[in-house]
Length: 227
Image (cartoon, rainbow, N blue to C red; front, side):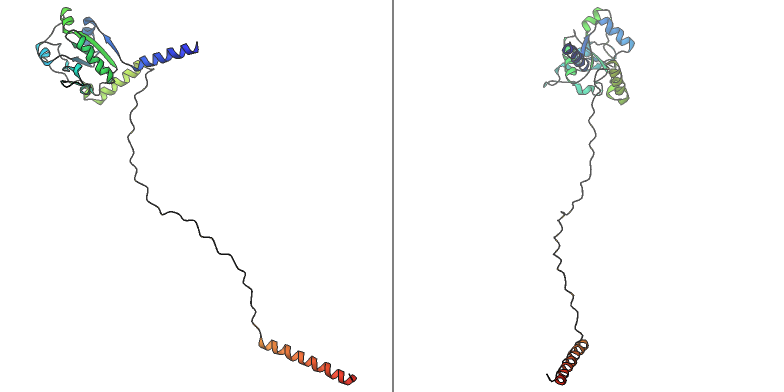
């Protein structure tokens, strides 16, 4: 039971950290545009197809599905700052849009939608234009908009880990070089010094005189006794 619970939790964690490309009907796509649900609305077709007819006020991401190939035009870097924003792409029939969205998913984009193509759009009765402004997505130029997308993504995906930002390296000055510390030299042994008392010649003379007097006194006593 515990193993099943752990597997279920991990599967939910993986799903929450991966993007899911949602396919929309043309009706849902149209209502989403009207309600302002998308931060980026992209046309991933060629310049020729885009100039012929397209949905009004979109961003032309020319041949995004060819990103990484020699003949690439648009790349995921063109949407830098929009990684957490809601992005919907369309093409002619939705197939190229799906390929382009897969490239964005591999690049780390999270909230992706396939709006199918102009074929389904026109069949549903929605208008196409031949000229309109090529919109620059605000999330590519405004850090505030980019941060709002990120906050909204975290609020809608509470189990998803917060993005890890690389810390700014701190440059510290090199430590000053120091001379190596040498161990102290052993102290020489202490030799006791014998105190030398200088001789007093007067004192020595008195000792000699005293000894001489004593010797003479002893000799005189012997003579008196007849020794």
